[in-house]
Length: 349
Image (cartoon, rainbow, N blue to C red; front, top):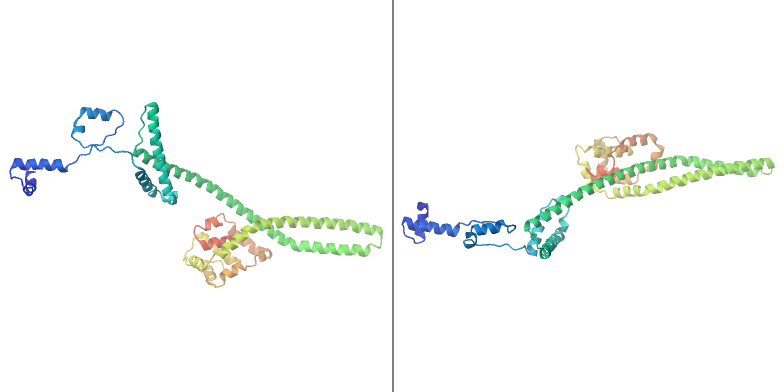
């Protein structure tokens, strides 16, 4: 120590003697070496140590930390909220949450003073309490978001049920289309029957009565057919919003989205399934290479928009083959949207 301190003592103008150098070393220690002792004012331990070691009062510099001001409370909360998990989604509310946390802490501190004034029982509200408040809020927020995620999953299942209902409505629409020729023929037969009744009315009263009965039966059949038509039309009207939503989604596609899907060398399984279904409807081979050729066609989107959907009713073989794609459990907009925007719109279409 003497050897190391000697240059410092000489630089300070001290004599080159062992005692002087040692005294200079002690002086440097007192000037530069700082020991920090941290005590909590809670309980009797602090008072007992002060009585047992008077030097804590007489030979130490006491820093008594007062409660944090509002600006400090805001800054600490803001830092903690900014460092929180981004999945909590509180980035846009950091300012409001920081202000709220400071107000809560200040309110609790004030109530602690009132509690002491009333019951003479001291409750210490420390900065640690403030940090624990922030951590508790973030923990509760994460827990509640988990609950909301579970509810969202249930809602998703409900949407899947709606999609199944839409498929049933499409089937009813197909049945209605197939019944149109039958309804038309029944109407024509009724007209012929009415003409026959008119021509034969003068022949005999018995024939007139018989024809009247036939007319009544034919009218009942027509009424029943019209009732069926009305019910089917109502189901069709209910399904139209989903159809318009699909067409709107198709309108939002642009060349960039198509190019994104076309760029897949080995597309995700769902994307390939969707484009195979599209190729089937467009009369192309159900392969990814043919799907890329179809996407490269300048009139691809227009061919989808102008597609004659009613032609499916007259092609049951095509409809049955298409059903093998759309009947998959994961053939829905939500599942496909995770892998491709273009495939999502085509899935809805």
